[in-house]
Image 1 (cartoon, rainbow, N blue to C red):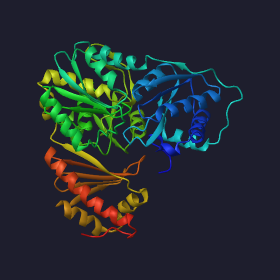
Image 2: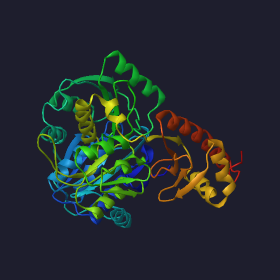
Image 3: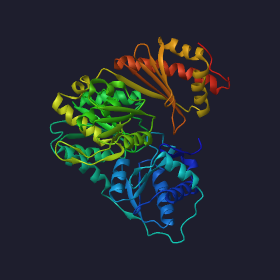
Image 4: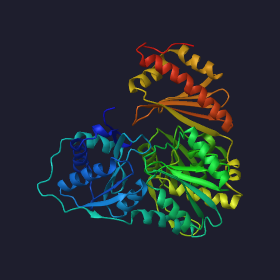
Length: 471
């Protein structure tokens, strides 16, 4: 696919992220947005990321900026360090998508760019370089350790004492910092599944073979939990002592409660357990994507937090941890929900017991890959214009629909109380399906049924049939 600029920055095939294209976007960003004291640059562990980061640094230097090279570092650690310095930042990462793709995430001195900033950057494409280049980049080697120290200060060095926790390292740029964080918080950490090759890990759609490995590791090493993140370290993954994955939105609602949040902002794809029990004064639903969550948090104010179904957590107020202060960080973070949930589980008899105390709403998500965007849009449009097509899908699932929501894609509330939510990815050629049900088993079954039927319908569209075939 051609490089695309949107909710998660610029993304595309590595072969199409040419030095000229990357330079143009960096120049446009510097021209259209406040750069602050400098431009800080970080990267993930993809093979293409070092060269792309070098291009970003040179492009910014060519605009007369001071630049800081943070090397391989998680996205939230880069954002935290840059914001503390009053600087802008660019993270070179494709997040969870395959290694043949990559991208750039842009940060202002105050945090992530907004939708308005995206528009301004696109308008500024074609900006020329400054006449006087800036100095050579200076290195920064402390961004990662400062990220870890933030949570040790807030939760205390004994927060995870006595726990035996595996770290599925794979190719996550966060892997060594996760191990360091566990040690600093009093836990025993075990390095598992480290890879020199880049492995795309989507915390919302973990592959069956990875799920099986989590169960084996947890059993054979007698672990209390297994933790990990996606490639750039802004989405958490947490499995319990049985190797069972805990959904990201469940991590989010537990973390919100641990921090004493009053308002929760979360996309329509998150499960409805956050609405139950009256723990929060207000729950605000948005479109999917951290810019929409951040906008909702800014509008709400007060003791507000945000999270996504992928588990990325955003803190919008000055919170107090068990051991010390926890300043705001309104960008997607993985370490906060991992530490908050594990520390609470240690006092609650384990992760399984903690999760069992939450409302009985369970989500599952996966995606169909290499789906042309036009086919995905046509399928969703067809569900709106042809009632029979939607009825055919629901008949396959053995359900009927009582409410629809088109805030982002198409979300169906079923008569059983279950939820089916379909949407094209905003940054990759993928069609995503989110489901919610009363048990993990029913959610997984509904997900598999839905993906099978959607795959059949999309094949009909992609083959040029013009409309999905009926059952």
